[in-house]
Amino acid sequence: MIYAEIFLAFFIPSILGYGGGPASIPLIENQVVATYSWMTTAEFSDTLAIANALPGPIATKLAGYIGYEQGGILGAFIALLATVGPSLILMLLLLSLLYRNRNSPRVKRLSSFVLPAIAVLMADLTFDFFATSIAGINWIPTIVIAVISYFAMERFKVHPAMVIGAGLLIGGLFL
Image 1: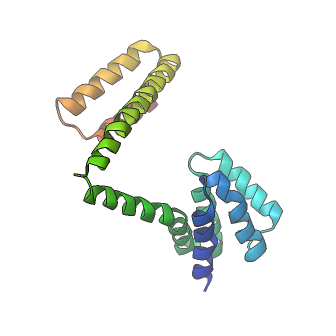
Image 2: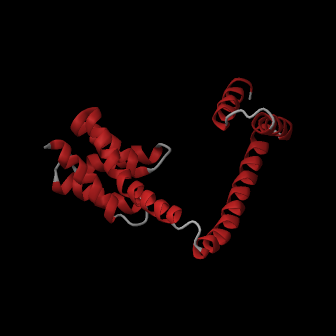
Image 3: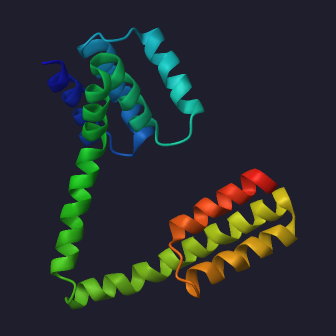
């Protein structure tokens, strides 16, 4: 029964929390404190403060911790599934709809407007990363790492995850 309660405690805020994790926090608090009495308001506030200090989405951190506290590892898994499940299901449904209609003139027109916007956002993100890297480690190591990464992926077909891992290792050891 506890696993069903954990699922509902995080599934309902995930469906109703339009606006992402911060919009879901009051809904999660209502479920955890008022509905199921798993925590007091002070305990939830402490949990929220710790979750805010860690990187990543706030709703999944709260779900993982509270689910683990109430139901162990299976409880954490169920809480995380309930938190990301609605978005995952809607995303898969929308992608299947787009894929089914990929030859439609409307979908092609939509893609022609969306893809350039995504490219601009990715370019902006890349320039921000370069600026941060140059400020942190200087421009010479930044350029060397970028060039080596480019050739590793394009010329030698190394998987991007391997390049990222190597970059983390090099940064951790030498920079």
